[in-house]
Image (tube, rainbow, N blue to C red; front, side, top):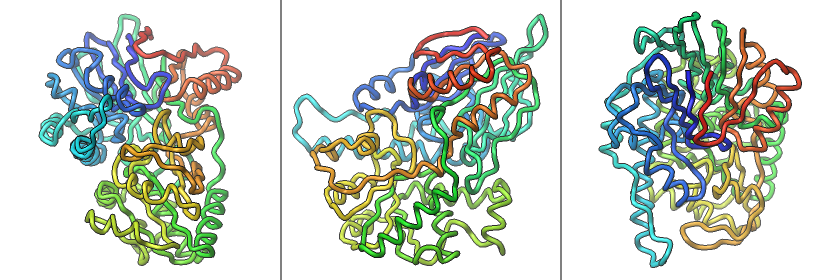
Length: 463
């Protein structure tokens, strides 16, 4: 069994791992690279392998950095199945359609500017390419073995990261017996709302490809995060503040709605207006409503009598562009939640354009900000920042709220890996070099018996 690392190696985007096993070439994820736009565009426009040579794709979940390049794979000649859970299939279609739409809108808008040397980038793929890609999906439930050929099969376990997310056990029959590789995709955090914690793995595992996004830190408790949010919102009422929350349309938007709803019900925060200005986020929330059986027990306790966690009386789902633009004239206190979570596209950009220079506004970063993204620049205090091809001084207060992260922290990652039976090799991916190095040291201290590797892009390793 051989693994070729083509994405999310020493960084957190573009998840793409090609496994050669049982005479097959199996691609784990096919995600968009994000960050420096032209650099990411070059990485995204050409596959690092012949698309037609791939025998199967196994998709861990529907975030764009894991599924967003599937239309390019199909466009360049992939003809086989794309395996995923049904929830992932439902959401991935929405994510990819939104990506195609934003690429076209960005191209058309930037084409109106005269900016020699920084010409707009043509869309990677179209809505038609996305619809063609969706014809390749094949749904698989958790806990069911799927044969790829006589020598190779795989099984999904709930990864607890977002709705439909799956950790994959890939099994190959060899002369000496059986070899098993576990791919975490993104591994869920503990004690966060809506979804259960990652399911334990039953089979002995020889090697694991594990994410390590937050391998260098420990999340604060949800109670501490709630206290932070309560103070932030009560201060917003006192000072009539506009709160801008960039949030991933998938996962983070639903979690923030859930938490705000719960805090309003508990009367820990006043009922100020909340605008969900994310058509994609609203569509994904509708998918969540179809899968209530996947929610954890805490959700039933927090919202008895079949009350929806995703709607409350002072919340409005914004749909039209005109209504979105009207929010720029809204006075605080108000909370505006919009995507994208890393501030790289979508409606969040015009809210930031309007508010980033306002000393009375607060920008709340609710998730991981990859290198070179606008969100990362705001996190690091860079000023001015470029929005819609214009420079803006950052005068708004910028704060972070990572405690509701859908990613496991160092403690959660170690607990998951150390619970595996028979483990010999660990490949750390989906983490920047610093995070991966810190986690490797921490894991090695407890498990010196493990061969731990942080693969570089385009490196290959044998299991």
